[in-house]
Length: 75
Image (tube, rainbow, N blue to C red; front, side, top):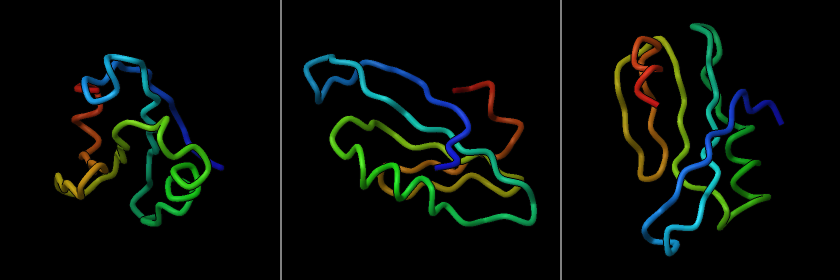
């Protein structure tokens, strides 16, 4: 798996237990998120939100947020 960063945060829906939030950084030519999909398959309930940093606009799909590169400091 090619997950670039992992962030650990407490989640209210998990009784404030920490969950891992994977972060993947994409280049302008790469847009696939297959490694995040495999990460979620493997670790399932232990994962919180998933983040993708890429050069495009902000996009939110259920538990996956695609953020522009300049918003990386918000994580």
